[in-house]
Length: 104
Image (cartoon, rainbow, N blue to C red; front, side):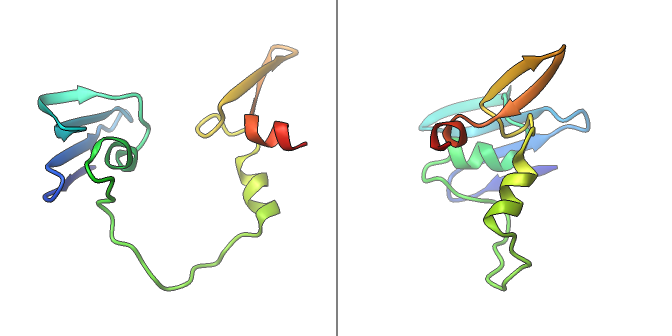
């Protein structure tokens, strides 16, 4: 996957192995060679490093099948890609979200 945004002069690519690289103008600095990031998708490069923050994907204004709040939370439960906290229980990691634990 290769993505670019002309107005932000930012580019990103995701390898077949899942590594995400970025180059171009990143937060006002010129990155001449592809730089390996910690991101798992190219969208995050544009959200965090493009000025202004942009998306390279087309946005649809047509309604999709929306999940309820409970369904969305269930989908993210024990998800290592979105969690910001993990517990080790009986040799297995359980992934959680600090904000949800604070609410409860």
